[in-house]
Image (tube, rainbow, N blue to C red; front, side, top):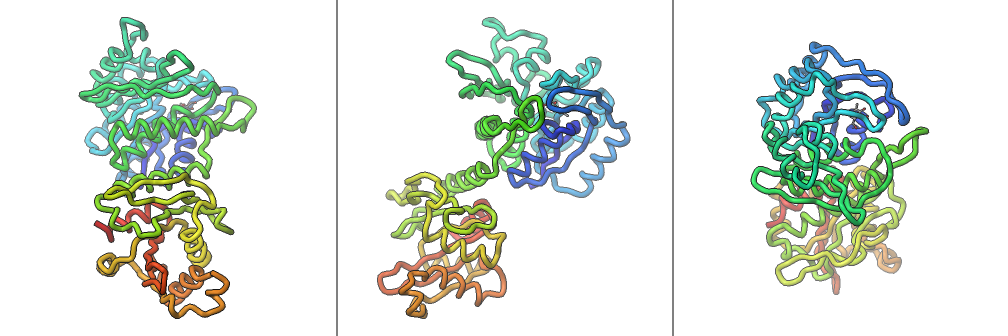
Length: 433
Ligand code: PXL
């Protein structure tokens, strides 16, 4: 997936374009970037701004549109009217999700939008927004209305929606009991997403929020799903904020969180596949995702219980833990040793129909015969390792799937492999249902 971030350069990488590159990379997404302005700043002070020329901006955008399929766009700092107009001309016919983060001032007090550009911002940028994400101050500024008992978040959000944004989320509305909530106004519905406040002053959380929304929308999730996802992603990024410079903390996503997030998302989607209960074997299913260069099953994340069949439903019994899986993790380790890019796997019930679908779907399939297993392997209990290596050796390319037909007292099994849980899920969708 390719996402385009249009915004300013922050050399400290806490916000702006550089922060988006970090976040989208953490989400396994390729980031295209168009710089509107260069800033000089660090975690304590905001220095100066130098916007790029209209010509430079136009050329950057044109060069990307000529080359790439773009799945979503995020607009951050736009700074002046000339920049605003070029962006409008280049984007107004596009039919992909656009998330607008209406940044006006930085945490450290820098000006990100000229006052005399506010009118054009409302006229040209706000109508591009599939979702606009003002915080409370930005929402009050854009609507020229203070939130109060009379002027509720809904009234303010409606004013911004009337400027042309399809969906509005006002973030950071403080409530009682240390709660902080986002008010959402979609086309026909409104709701509140509330959560705990983390009292840390940090740099980049707003950027992370809008980045996570466009990521999720680009993956065809609904507005609501995307906003819930973004809220959690932002919360995690604030929790992991680090003191890198001398001033404010810089938000970050730990790669372990990313592994967990990716696997957890894929497991949820797996359980929702129609009729998937038919593919759960007697010994149940595990779905695993490893760190890079795993040394043992302790480096492989899996479910400490199993994905189990409960009549026609499939439920997750247990939690994600490193070392949570033994069998599927062992199979993955053998595969990863030969093909280090393969980091995820799942086991499914052996069925002749599935095997024929696998063969028809052009996936590469390997197999092994447990009855050919040497005695010493059986005694050592390293059947899985032996079997996977056997199948790999007999396959010219990286196998997507390896199966065996069982042995006396041993259930036959199919294991699907991939680079990521998402990749595994795609293969599962091809061969089930
Ligand atoms: O966080 C908003 C933001 C966006 N873009 C750039 C910034 C900032 C805040 O400092 O510098 C370039």
